[in-house]
Image (cartoon, rainbow, N blue to C red; front, top):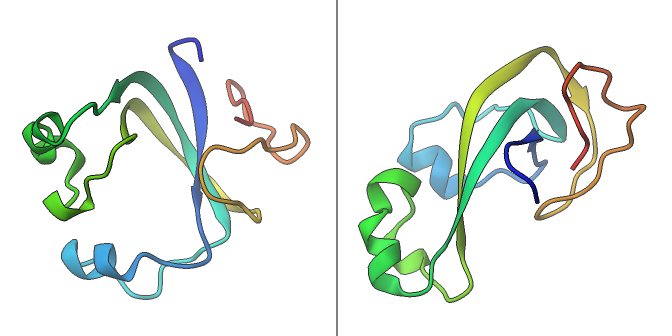
Length: 109
């Protein structure tokens, strides 16, 4: 991946109930939609738990969530779309057909 890279932000249909409780989000958030876009500016590979623990104030995960092979992603320039775009997603990074998104500067990755 070449930086900076514009990425779409997708809300899955299955909510993270733990995150909803921890961060006091409303329980009726919509899912299965593309909400907007961000610019990915950096990736941090977490090579050990000490490194993971040091970044907890940044990534906000619980200490017990650590496992080998995790990465941290840094984003900038968040942009919410005026209307969410219905889209069935999947876990991880996935491609989005170009016809789905017609906003300048967006790439479906």
